[in-house]
Structure formats: C-alpha cells, structure tokens
Image (cartoon, rainbow, N blue to C red):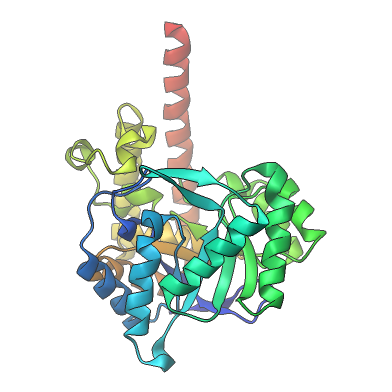
Amino acid sequence: MQTRTLGGTDLNLSVIGLGTWAIGGGDWAFGWGDQDDDQAIAAIKRAVDLGVNWIDTAAIYGLGKSETLVGKAVASLPSGDRPLIATKCGRTNAGDGKVGKSLKRDSVISECEASLQRLQVDCIDLYQMHWPQPDDEIEEGWSTLVDLKQQGKVRHIGVSNHNVSQLQRLQRIHPVASLQPPYSMISSEVEAEILPFCGQQNIGVVAYSPMGKGLLTGGFDLARASSLSANDHRSRDPRFQSPQLEINLEFVEGLNRIATELGWTVAELAIAWVLRRSEVTSAIVGARRPEQIEQTAIAGTRVMSDDSTSEIQHLLSRRSEALDSLDGIEQARV
C-alpha cells in the first residue's frame, strides 16, 4: 500500500482510506439501505489488516451509528494497530431521519464531544466541516475548530465540499489542512480549479466516491439499479435512473475492456484514476463487508499509465456527448 503525506500535516495516510458512509444504514435521509453491524465491524478490521491506516466517518452518517461502529471496531484492535480517524461536523440530527445544518459554535462543540464519545477516543486525528452550510456561518464554525485544535480535542482541521472562495475565506483565519471533495471519472469538476488551488496552497485532498457510489465497480447493472431499496438514497439519484443509467453502464463496459487488458478490475481502474493526480493524498473507498475492501485495497498499489489515461479520456468524451444529447432531447420536449 502506498502512502502520502496529507498537505502540511504530519499525517502519513495510506492512499486508500476506508469510507463508512454506507455502514450507517438506511434509517436517515441519505442512507444506503439496511446494514449488518457485525459485517461492518469486520470490514473495518479487514481494512486495517490490508494496510489501510485511516478511516473516514461523520457524525451524521446513520445519525451517529457509523461513528459508534467505528469506535467499537477500533477499540477492539491492539493499540499499535489502530488506524487514524477522520470525522466531520456541521450536519445535525433534525429528527425523523432528517438532516439539519449548523456551524454555530455551541453546535460544533457539542458535535465534537459526542463524536469523541462514540469513537471512544480522546482526540480526533482530522476534524472537518462537512459542508459550507449555512455559508454565513463558515467562519464561526472554522474558528471553533481552531479552538478545538488548540484545546487538544483534535489534531488537524480540514473541510469537505468547499469551493475555492470559501477555502480562501477560511485560510485568512487558520491554514486549511485538507479538503474532501467528491471526485471520480464521472464527477470531475474539481479538476478545473479546486485541485490546482489545493496543490498551490499545500492543502491535502482526500477524495470521496471515487467509484461513483458503486457505478464504477463493474458490478452494477440494470437489475441491481431497479432493486435499490427506498431507503437507499441512490434510488433517487438520476445517474442510477434511465436514461443516464444506460449511458453510464455503456461507459463502464468500455472501462472493463481497458481494465481486463491491464489485468485489473474496473474498481481498481476507477480508484487509480483518482490517485493519478498529485494533489490527491488518498481516495476514500467505502466497504460494508470484508470482501468489498479485499477487492479494492489492491488499488493502493496501482499506477495509471499515460496510455490508459488517454483511453479513458476518449471514453469520457463519448459519455459527455451522449449526456449532452439527452439535454437536447429534453429541450426539444419543452
């Protein structure tokens, strides 16, 4: 497993980080369907066995359930084997499975204390503001994270889902250690401005959803998409619905041909694509069961060649043309 240093911090992260969004279950607005808790804990332990040295979670995942499972799994490991933990604040439990938004000082402090208890740790290795919402509260939230760092509650502070102008606002208060954006072959908007800015400012990037929430694993098809449960938020995502789904699956067929020639899987190809960027420290790879991380951890040894990159760019151009044609059809119907 390769490792890279996160920005200007002393955190040396494995290039594969374990994502725990899905293990929070389906009993909240952005759940991933039902989840077996024992399998989730086993997946965390297996990830550590395979060389993954950090876990990404958030207070809102499963309304605290994900953090609780991470805490149980990590506490059961020998102290010398325990991974680094990154979690987030700013998304709150609004009741009935709904999500609230607050970066007010009291709310952030309360969230941090609750996360420390659920994770069963005295200090969080990387604490992040989950979303820049409400926007007019990001300075208050960030200043609170600075205070938590000074108090020793957290080691390093970063953000998730922030744009360049928001990063600049926060940088005036305290250096931003890291940014966590969505980044994959089919969600590459960060390449235009955000990744170059982070590279210039020495802000570490930990990319989430590098496999497009499962679309880029090679194991997704029409039948699986149609069987997504109502408590799996992907059932409401246009990329998992016709007509975008058929275009995405055709794109994956092309990826499969490239991956087969390399002796890789489509999932490995998707992760290596994200890691090809020098600004990216690590790709966050979700797993609900041990066998899932067993299939993807090997991507931490893969290096994308220029030839493969060019082939994928060609496939991406064809996908963009197909999606653009859908826009034309919709406009013609209006």
